[in-house]
View 1 (cartoon, chains in turn purple, cyan):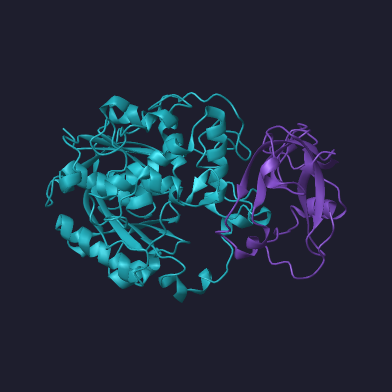
View 2 (cartoon, chains in turn purple, brown):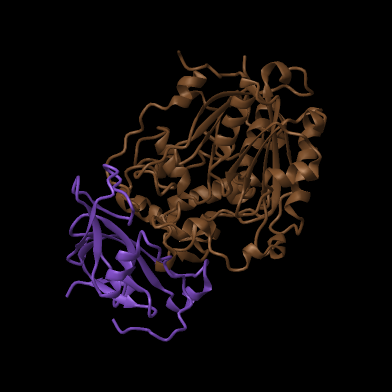
Length: 142
Length: 398
């Protein structure tokens, strides 16, 4: 996706702090990485300093395929929260099941919001919304 | 040691509210003290007897315990302060019941105030663009929000719950509309309801604008200003007060975990980090404690921040099997006069969003027989339920 490094991005940004910094450092390099517990091998999401299954802090940031399927979605037709979203109306917020298991809350872009179907294959797209932040979104698989 | 049996050991003795309105332009303290005065009048208690205080603070802005005790001139020896925005009604009353039965306090006031950004909230800088604290969590907001992906309101997030539910079970838009229409109809018999005098038909509902389909405008509760007070004490003290006490007969707490993180989705709907599976309601402690079951409940009260909460709560508590609530809520069954009236006050959708504390006021008044035209005949046992698993049964006692 074309980067929008305009410095005028008005929408909310993730709060980056030491626990989640490796995730956002990876997305900035256009890599989708999630934590795999090196003790019990659980791949986890959301990003967390601990494994929800075994409470271990031992972790590897595993590079994922970026492939997934569309679990469910909504088309937001009115921006009732932050007005900065108005320019994107209508836009898709989706639950995407990654090939490796975890389910992300994200956006499906680069397609007609009203053309989506359950289970459709998707692939990751990296949206460089600011110089510091790259968001993980999805588009229909090519 | 067996658990203490707190069935019918504590009572709601006084309830009071302010007027309810979209914008009242009265400060939280002013509103909360007005509701407190009304609750004291309701039970004939002197304010100096109140020695326990439970409140919720945050956004929508309420009154914290330091502030309230100073302004109301009361001296407390026990307090508990929750996050506002509505998950805490049951928890507050459980805490009050355990406080008075353990003797840590004698009379506990439960307070809840709502102010909105375009109302008195204008005076508080925290409303001027501040980000909601739950939205800062790596796991997102409690309804599943993730604001940097544009899922930045409870309503948009809950529309994902609605979409999963409706797709999985084949529910229709008209069926969804039956909930808002039923609660609006109930509110026409409640002069303190914000939507009193504003009836709504299913045609009105169907022609209202979409916010994020399947949710239309009227699938959302109201945002508004006002305050609620509830006073709890032991059964012995209750019997010495002005009105017949309402008995706290059964309760159970908030359930949470990865399958409950998105708290308006009952387990099994596959929203957020939840697994998707065929949900079967397990036995619920609230019935065992109160020694009643679903068929003994004369009217039901649901945390109806959004329409689908009624479906997810009904199924969570086994009023109907998973996937059947969208049929259950049809044909007037949940309206006053129906087989199982729900939210006789009009609910958060049509009386007002007072975080569910207004439902407990209504339950108390119903059990006392004070509800006039909207009185549920022979109301003996009423139940509060939520999609997130907490519940309370109030009764007239023996």
